[in-house]
Picture 1 (cartoon, one colour):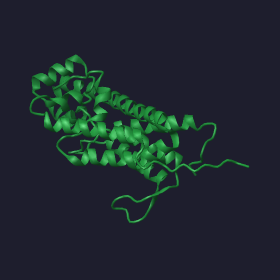
Picture 2: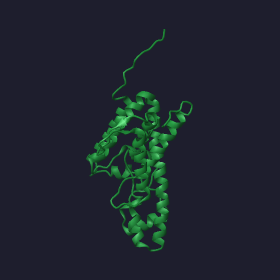
Picture 3: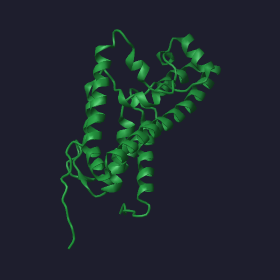
Picture 4: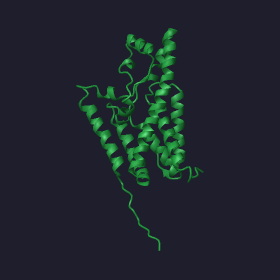
Length: 246
């Protein structure tokens, strides 16, 4: 006789719950201590740029010449959000809860925490790599006195913050493990399977990352870095029992 035991999924598992609490506490600290401490500026992920470029930015008075890259920012940036809008943290935490709780129930807390942090680090790695390339391009514009190009590309080396990269990794993993789950997405009047929704989001980020759109302040390559890292980890975990992406 087989021993079958049903376990009810936890609607708010501990790792997801504590990640949301930590992000909320950091957000509150950003709002309440902004006048005394530059918490947001400290926690942001600033680009790794050549010293010569940093000196030129300081001399030009560009806001991108504020803080410089510090190793701890690789971690702190994914627990802090823009204090100027509540939507940023609300969307990230809602998405983490919606998809992350399912994965934590399937994998367990320890594996999910490792996965989440790894996706955040992968997001930071790709973002920093692309920004370093852009820093080299911007330095060449300074050296050529191409002020129009400098003005058009200065925003490409702005600092990044937010859990979006890690959350994109969670979404990529969900789409891999549950590819045919139908999702209802805002402004789309019909359900979309998770695999197509994730591919659509990745395509949007790729387009946004390689094009220059005025007013676009989204770290698209951080999103892609998190999604790629998440996909590779889950692919490795499932290589002996692969699910078809149909």
